[in-house]
Length: 277
Image 1: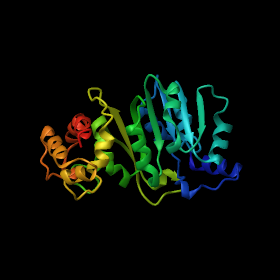
Image 2: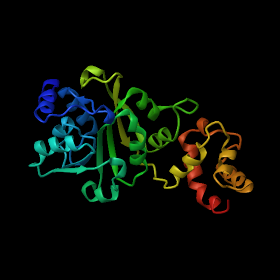
Image 3: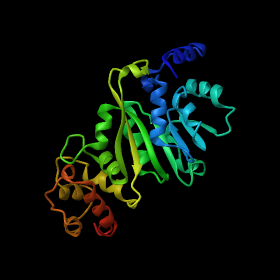
Image 4: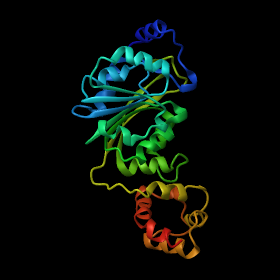
């Protein structure tokens, strides 16, 4: 879709972009093609989050076995229905993605799926945390993000941006930049630059169900030591000491300084010690 296409579609439906929902629509057809090629949906179903007017949807439907699109805005839903309702491989869910039960979408997304999304800044972290902690069989993701938000995924230990999001993303996915998207690639134009990151699942890494709990506990107070955060999470003095010793981690270490592999060791050892907290 071009800027002219977007303006015409909005005018035809009497819609003004909702700034509160971060509605900046991709207005570059070549960029849409590049993003879809990066996520490579051929032979896969796609989960699209926030399809908006359907700029990516239109291209995804040319390649994917199915596109399951989750859209919160009723006005966008009306437009999407008018554009794609006659397409058998299109499934539209009118809902807040953060409130969607992903288990109900699983039948559409088995045995593996890819994710495509244009994420507004204000809700990037909760959406991505939901994806990264879900049981969905995600093979790849292509996410359009404001640059500041994108930096959180690739942040290194010791940096200000490093946190649970970086640990989960780097543990389970290889992350590569796909393209930069200046404000002129959108309508209306945002005030910041955006980037597209591609996430490819690491085949040799096992999912650790306790990892989100580990991260919530150890990053609860960033400046406190692992030992003190474990104590605040309910571990006894002996339980916290034994867990850290089992993982080869010093009690005085801080979560913000540890690589993802250290949190994986904590997650692997977590439950036996947690029950003895």
